[in-house]
Image (cartoon, rainbow, N blue to C red; front, side, top):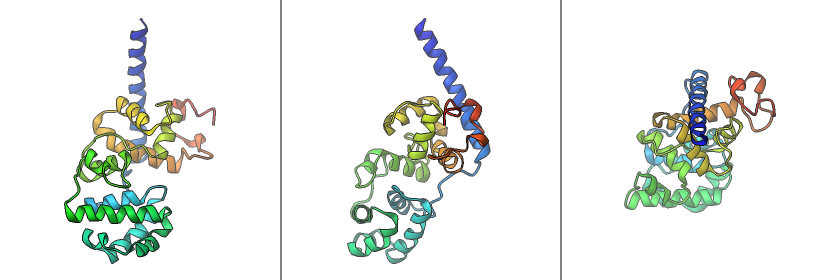
Length: 219
């Protein structure tokens, strides 16, 4: 009996999640990456690494200068570390990001990057979230769902997960969504998080998900 109830709950959650995604797709039809360097896999990877704890707008500005001075992976791998720190200073974490960028550029220049989940996660500054974004955007490969702060916050508020761990949140979301939606979910949640479901003072009064959000009356 309990097993049957759990199955019904899981089915109901999948139906609710489909509705959530359908509503968000209608609200944000153009949701997608806002990083300018989104054609070349190597440059895109560098930009995603730089985007940690930073806005895409700032990354775009710094990346423009970075690739103007160091247009190839080889050039970037030989860039003076002090110059890289200067260029990347507006992004925060400039010391670490400078080292990551130069090392990743060196790997691409010397032997080439392995564009797989495992290969990408072996690179400095690249975790599962970054690898998911790169594989989805550059190669159309859905290995999972990239869980950033917006995605985590909205997932918890909607009752889609009760975990604080990004890996567990990703597991909960992938169990509810069709694989062909995995890459889109992150962009939809980011768009909604930036516009409506903000960390502070979420705009629940104008949220299209208010009637199916268990947190609406509590925030």
